[in-house]
Image (tube, rainbow, N blue to C red; front, side, top):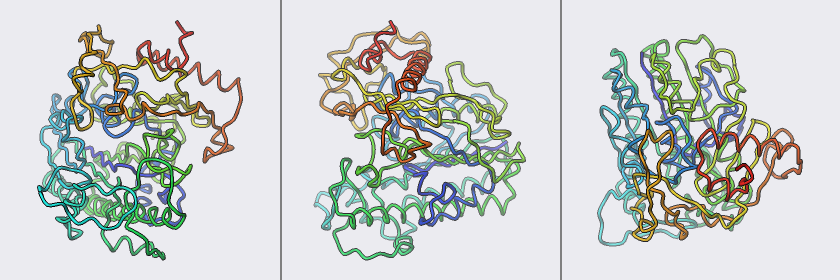
Length: 489
């Protein structure tokens, strides 16, 4: 048995052809959909990047207990469980956050791994002299412009190298059995740095400054500038699609569909001017960012080219892969095996929880989305951890001075953990400064979430289910306090 999880970062569901987009060029995602199952109600869980990846190891939410961070000593890890049971595991990625302080424990869980350098602000090439940065809108980080100087052809693009290495692994191991490939691309994450031939797919008149990396915040640019940036994303999306096609060709040519589980997924989407906002994390997790695409081709099933309406999440992926290899899920995994959904759209959950540490807690049943904001000054709020690192730095001495030992939770497997005040300066929890408003949306009547509704009966139902799911996931007491749920005690 073989399994491949091919992951794209920041893959916008609503801009893919299989999900109804008519203006982007993504024919290979359509090919992929024809080979398997397209999930219409897949939601993120813990957000953003590394919290989402922690879920793909542990099969459980983590955003209620800490922000961005590495795997913890008590965490279950999908590839480690596979490895201990004789399934070879390999990881290929150009996602630089794996090699930073807040992600440095993930790749060592695999039998082998390969890294591709150069994306975004990856501290790759050393250059004392400042690079020439063109006139631009949005972000123009120094290290990114240093890196771009060394990526002067499509073949040198990190995306191209990630696919070259992935296809090399497949060619080497296509006749072997019992392996899992975690194959991950940073693209189409910003900056939207695509090869020129993909930009030519979206001709338009624009003579303004370079704009392929918007700031996280409100839209301040002109409509023409916004549209140009959307085309820059679309070009990178089409580049991802072209390389996906190389993988599909390999699967076709080597007749691997009948013996290989293929999962294509993402962590979250990206706001490209919708709601007059750019990016993520500082804003509510609207459907553009939280309602994500997922495709699964399961060789055990004869179902292909079909869609599924059941509510699913990324926490289901590790459980599904373990079950595929005949292994039981770890006791602390809360995800579900998606085989019954693939087979006949059997419901595996009624509600899905999602959010970011210190921000809104959100819940959906697939029709309604309820976004619950703090009723206090977002206090109290703590990180529970044995690994005190943020994205690119350690916890500060000031943060660590607040640390006390906590007895831990059921999922910490008897290990006490540090309870540390969440940073107020934004260094650790970017969402701490948000002033979002609690809102309820009816996606059937308002799929673009333009007009929140007032319905006390539905809101009370969603509150009740949110509290239930928080309890099931051992949310610490202060989460109920900051959200105004202290009445449950």
